[in-house]
Amino acid sequence: MTVLDHRHHTAVPGWLPGATAPRSDPAPLLPDASPVRVLGTPELEKYDPALLRELYRRLVVGRRYNQQATTLTKQGRLAVYPASTGQEACQVAAALALGEQDWLFPSYRDTLAVVSRGVDPLEALTLLRGNAHTGYDPLATRTAPLCTPLATQAPHAVGLAHAARLGGDPVVALALLGDGGTSEGDFHEALNFAAVLNAPVVFLVQNNGYAISVPLTAQSAAPTLAHKAVGYGIPGRLVDGNDAPAVHSVLTEAVERARTGGGPTLVEALTYRVEAHTNADDATRYRDDTEVAAWREHDPVLLMERHLRRIGLLDDALVQESADEAEALAARMRAEFHADAELDPMALFAHVYAEPTPQLREQEAQLSAELAAEAEVQHP
View (cartoon, rainbow, N blue to C red):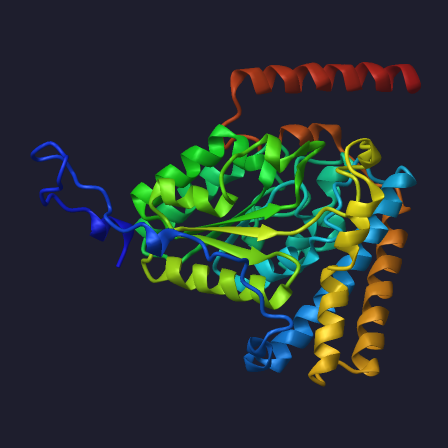
């Protein structure tokens, strides 16, 4: 039953005759009283062992990916890197919850989710290197370009999901956002349209506590961000964002619900950004070491290792195998990023519009003339 099915025109005390009645019981839309958890609960032993081991492997590789990308930024090989260190459970679970036909709409902090989706790390980081608008083919990878403006990818996800449904394609779109993105108008518009259209889209808000330096308490007075779903008439789910199996379970359920006509879901994952907002940020100005240390005790990689060992699903061999894979990825990233890319400045104008605008053509001609003049000076 969808949200649209609950609309009716029966008489409601206090309402004007003929007015559309509100949904009488919002309880099915409300998030759980506490975040969904799997690790450390009896539910863990009900999960597919292969899935749990795969989640662990991806977490280990993802952590090393974040570390290496951060190092490359400090070396000047990347212009900027918004690390998702501490948020890896959200990233890898999001990628695993989607089918091959589905679409991922990432924010700028979601390069790990893009890599977990199967995009080459060099291509995933091309935008942050400053070399191109995006480094991969969105259509081939079913992954939208990394989105730097806050929340603008959310309406795009709704539009694609709605269009796919109209075309008869069983596609689900998953939009990734941060808590700061929920303060943007695009977030409101996306959820409102998704609910009204009953679009097959899932919104995952990774609540890491801060929008750059602004704490969540200065952004929203809602009980949780998941509660915002009720105002749009869609379900809200609250999950421990550092519990990889829990995030995967909640997202998988939401994706399946969307695919089978149940409509959109808003999922809030409670997590923490261990690193600074970017390499240009000094996080010590707005949070103290005690807070960071407390969250390090709830680290997604350590949680998985601890609990999988407890139930006998993780041994030293898998730990070493995962670490070796992670180091191999880091080594390849170092080798590829230390080689200077061969760039064509005119490529800036390709794939911006299907039909270039007059302004774009004017800019293209201007840059072409400047490059020609520069070449004449260098090689008369």
